[in-house]
Length: 244
Image 1: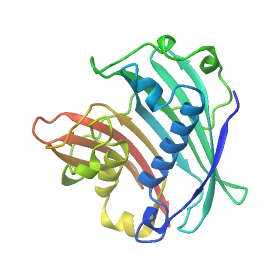
Image 2 (image 1 turned 90 degrees about the vertical axis):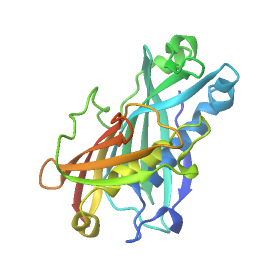
Image 3 (image 1 turned 120 degrees about the vertical axis):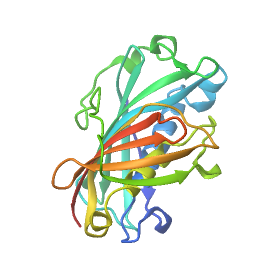
Image 4 (image 1 turned 30 degrees about the vertical axis):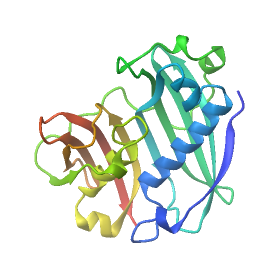
């Protein structure tokens, strides 16, 4: 199966206070090109919606080899990298002027919108998706260690802006909330070099969440995003930071 490659200019609105592309914005680029490729392959959002199904991102691993700045022009490439049971794999590479700057690996599920449960992929994807081409990075782990106690916490109320077409919180919002909990010194002096995100449960408008970041090494953190009213863990992350 041929990969898809598309240009993505980095707009100022996608950069942080230091002019660097934010992780939620980059994750949005990956989701956009993944959607374009799925549509070209006949399994896009609308094709699934007519069957009462939807794609859901379950896990992602992102590695940033170099900083990407406002005004840069990226070329992103993506391809399906295997499907088994209820898990569909998709990988990505990003270049800037021929220099590789990022790689990512993701795990997706197809959800039955009425039952709110994943379906077996042999009901949805044909044999093309079962091929296993080379991976861009090691796939996300099956499980991340819990963040544990302590660390720094931030509280957020879910906004309209955080809700996607499936009426639950967007993937990018979980990621943004997690990163907001790192210490200010890390934010001011470092950039994100790698992250892994596991999305554990849905959340909808009207809730509040608590984001916690617990040190797990010199510049590593374990993160938990928790629904405040019932303590339900919605997302679990690991991040690694390097000096800016």
